[in-house]
Image 1 (spheres, one colour):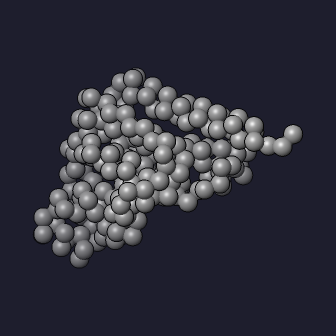
Image 2 (image 1 turned 45 degrees about the horizontal axis):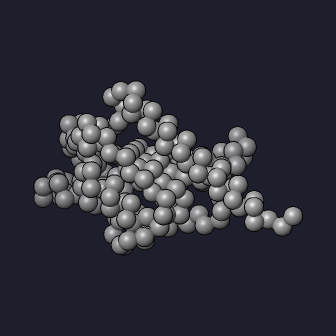
Length: 186
């Protein structure tokens, strides 16, 4: 965010994160309380916070868990695709948990749009509901895509949903700025 501000004179940004990028996006947006904050919203596409702890680790058998902890990495298949899971990913994941502290515990106060495919082979659709509950933000909208896969890139409508989610946040920010300006002394 600082780089965008410095290099491209971007005063405001909407963070967009897909899959693990959704987890990173949420950590980047945490703690922004200032109404003139540079992060004005977040769009999570199949965001999977805590996936190492809640999805991957429980799905591994004991031999695979032991191998990753002793050898440092293991190749697994997840959602029909090969993934490399490392010991440091598992350990760092434990330090970066977001959904384990209850309702409104994730200090992201900006508008959030979550887009989740019901046909996602990697992330259960309930994760979006858990994330929505954990967010401090009041302006959270979840869009479920009936046949959407994990990457949500199968057709043009998926890209339109993402674009419209970003546009919705930008409109929300413009409206909030207008109302803030009404409270200024003349």
